[in-house]
Image 1 (cartoon, rainbow, N blue to C red):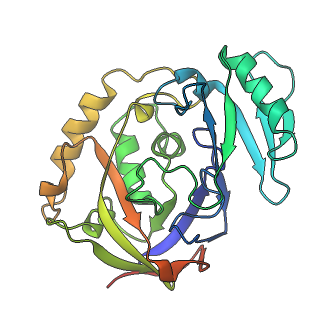
Image 2 (tube, one colour):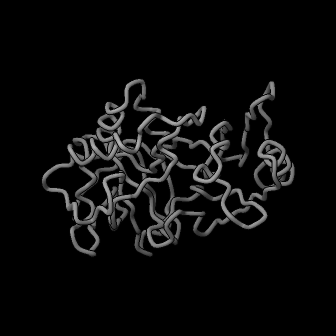
Length: 259
């Protein structure tokens, strides 16, 4: 029986995630506290791993209940601790100094800052998929691959690429439930440059994208709606949640069923 094995939230977009036992669905369909904060430059563009590889060098730990961020900046002996609301300016100053240009940290408690505004629900992948994909790259562990892919919801009790049945060949969505939360699976998630980089050092894995595409195409199950792939550098599933999901809870161990 497919079940919810992990929930990962990323309180500050592009920084490290935090694993939680339960998560609340917002009215927008996003998970509460996921990508609630984001870093912006003076042009109001995201300061993220796609545009700034240096962001990978930051290590972040969050205490969600207290809304604090412990930030380890390279070159500093010990981490700095910031309250994400009360010490926002100090955090912005520390990040600006590290990055070499002025940044702002902004908050959105309604929707967070998703990459895809049309698919603002949690991204979904299976543990077996992460294990399979990690096996394509010598010296990359499952945990490292998890940090490269940065999905929100991880499914246990299934085979690799099970989640690829959560989108269809046509434009229709696929309905499924996680516990009593209704989801719409929309499409495979097209990956960016971030998975090609080591999440700690930012070093680029040689031929990562080429290897990924070759292996993904070779291992895709024959029942997968491949017409939905623009290219095979795609992994995990983008979702939307209906308004009726607002306020509902996702919890580790919830059963997952396709409707």
